[in-house]
Length: 276
Ligand code: FES
Image 1 (cartoon, protein in one colour):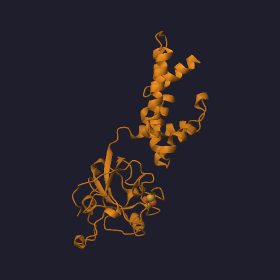
Image 2 (tube, rainbow, N blue to C red; image 1 turned 120 degrees about the vertical axis):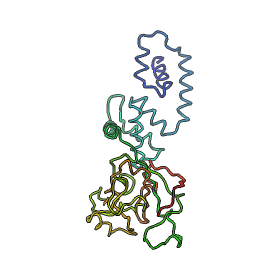
Image 3 (tube, rainbow, N blue to C red; image 1 turned 180 degrees about the vertical axis):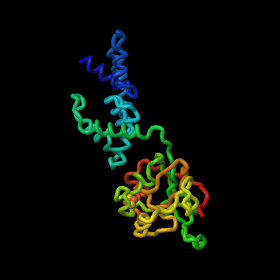
Image 4 (cartoon, rainbow, N blue to C red; image 1 turned 180 degrees about the horizontal axis):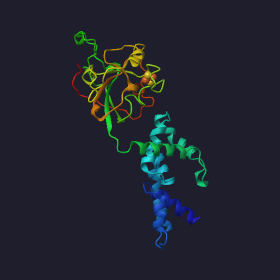
């Protein structure tokens, strides 16, 4: 019994440190804490745990209890949150995925952690590219903006927000609904490139060029198209596009705007130069 209490107290008192390291460090030592000391640690740790948010509790469970690295634990949490699991049900979900881990049974967590690990490895060394997204509610509709060039003008960026993606991914990726998974079979990923980032003569080293014929055919089916309209799934992000400003048309099913699953987005008040 004492042994169990002691083990439990040590486990809980070492939140933030991997348990296996502690166990091996203690192996061979004879200066174990007294039951009294362990009890104090246990009470302190319990208080600390009860003040943790569900996300912190989940991260502790993954790293301390199950021994996953912080990067994988964060990736697992991120993946679940992005897939609609609410923070309050996060811990329960991870526990149920872990199954009866005490007896080496798994309910799906190992596969999820393995895919997170594979994704982390594939992204290693890649730069991130920031995009400034302007929802349709942030577009200016003042009549004086209409200078006849058919392009929307951005005067207010206070509704804009920034998202980050890794170079090599597509502009929309996981942020805007892509109904056909990027095979140009729909136009749900329609976006409008802010004019200063668009190159009509096809210079794609630092800008985004015009669409090809097949893409144009799909853009024709989209709402509120402009001269700089593109399908987001067809635009590969390169480091030179860092700071790219993209307008999100009204009517697009945008996960960032609806805040349903785009957990990675960050809202910012921006003071960027006006487009056009
Ligand atoms: S996701 Fe269907 S065309 Fe881009």
